[in-house]
Length: 399
Image 1 (tube, helix red, strand yellow):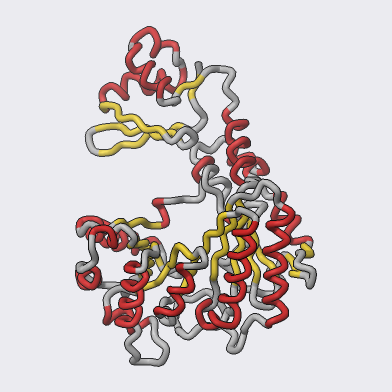
Image 2 (cartoon, rainbow, N blue to C red; image 1 turned 180 degrees about the horizontal axis):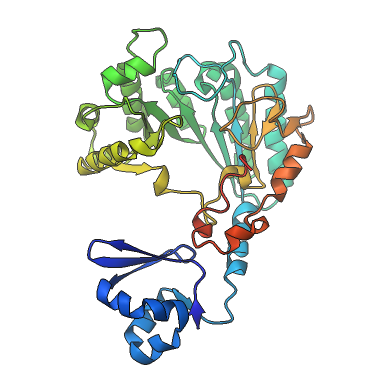
């Protein structure tokens, strides 16, 4: 027997907690017991067998110790191969525009007025979707997500025709289409949602910046405008029509609020409707980690009020849940036909990884070939790091 490469032990109150990042297992050990076994765990596992068979069994069952012939790096490689090369799923992110009707100070994108997908590019996107269905024989699920900019600015001219064609074609070939929007929620209305109900849209992510007073200072069409009430009304409308809604709350050092001031707007929802509403608390990217304590307090308050709530740390990029940018069958198509793998970036020519062609294919650039070669196995320091399975060498975009 040998120690797993991926054990972490840390003190929490009166106990020592152990966590294994590969097998996602955890144990709790009394401090005095851990003190007796710490050296054994590190140097001589056979002492555990001889002196404490109960500890040995726990360690073995939770895979803190494994058989000598277990190659844990091969297990990591197998997870990554399955996750990044899954043939049953294809994900397409579409930016109908990178323009936006809001002026949020922290937005990382460079908004371009009038940056709207042309009808020609729209038809090329439709060809690409159909070609994807035609050529991927093992495909079972096609995900189309709408991003931007504000994707609902051009719902009628761009989004609606693409969704209609994609839904019809996927249905004809027995492919399950799942679509969703990352939106500020301002343009949502009955007509849009009624169309979405019948065209495989399942989810909306809509951002709020705290309570009404704080939100209207940050997310506005013109200074002083009240976008909060309109967006709250649209969130409730989405939920009542059966859509899943993630309410993203961005937290900065200036975000000071009582969560109940925001939650009270949703207290009249039924229990079934509340189950469709999810809160996601995220740090404004320019802020340092000093706001994390504020985030934790907000999360706890929301959960105490009976709503589901997560943060970035609730669902990290791991070998079992790799970033969409690392998956072979995932693309981001910008309004002008430029193709990227990642949305968290400026959509510049230098960052572009491919070009959508008139026949619905993609002509990839050398930058894409470089990304494909990036692997956690390229970094010697990663191979001996106990958090490697929940880090996966970090962001391929930055690398």
